[in-house]
Image (cartoon, rainbow, N blue to C red; front, side):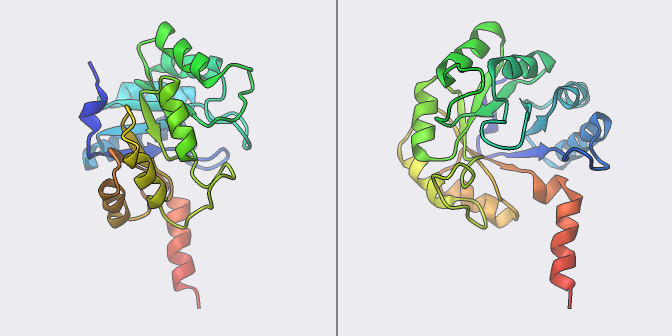
Length: 224
């Protein structure tokens, strides 16, 4: 059975494409996930029920599944319904908004996490935006906590790279849940710095699996 310990000091690759993009297809996501695993990913993070199902059939590593519904506020797996759907689609870990903001279904974060634990075998990763979020998420029963929403909730400025200060602050609290560094990690050196700052594991998405953005970086750098 999967345990978070297997992710210690590892690379987790987020395999996602935005709606309307050429790569937005479960079959493509599964192929990208397979490629990431061949390259050394210890787990993959996948958005959307169809993508979760396709990736579950394609790889043997743990899947962190989420369901984005909307674009603002609480939209990462925002309700218990979304969370259970991700678990039933095959996610080993359900990633959800782990902030202290009100949830669309009126349930508390604790109620949502408890609902996932009681009705599935999935663990819960709380995507947080601050130290206070991380503390509250662990108290609510989250199995893992991430810095995914750092710079997106108004509590902290958006850094150009990973929010290493936040990682250090959360790590110093020695909370009873692995800390996953996620957000704006664009180079191997930044990933290593996140581990050195106290992260348990590191999630990289755009810099590995989003060719549109990677291409734009090069195009901008070469532009006269």
